[in-house]
Image (cartoon, rainbow, N blue to C red; front, side, top):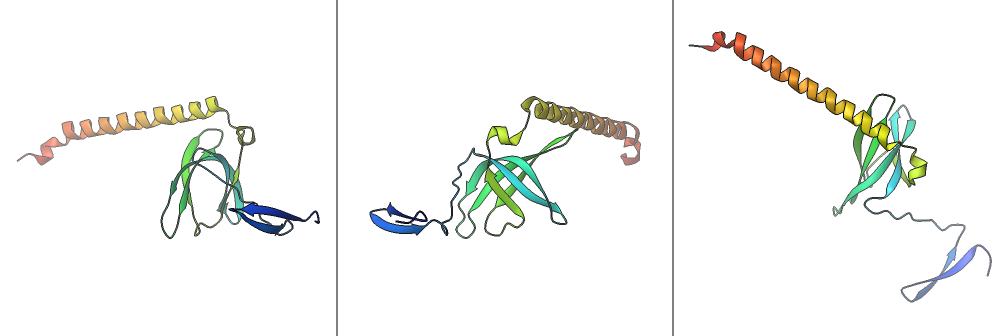
Length: 142
């Protein structure tokens, strides 16, 4: 047999496969690390670390749910992409933790800074409400 052909057995049926035209099939499960390639704008693509977080077995559009992390020097943002037959300009490939190049402590620090910032925004909104109720309440009496 040539180096380009192989016989395999599937459920008791022997099939000859031409390896020059055979396609590899990646298998994924929830929890697998992936790299997500997404078109940002004008056919510029960027790769992000991600993890498969779910699978929705819809009848017409089975969908893989992937959480991915956009990071820069001052922020870390968790986003989601829904991959199905209609998804355009998104690709995924398997990834190992070494491929991703993330430092857990840095991402946690960035997320903690965002939490502190949002907590301060909430405190400020509450102060504005108190001020409104205290000083503008007379407009609504009577």
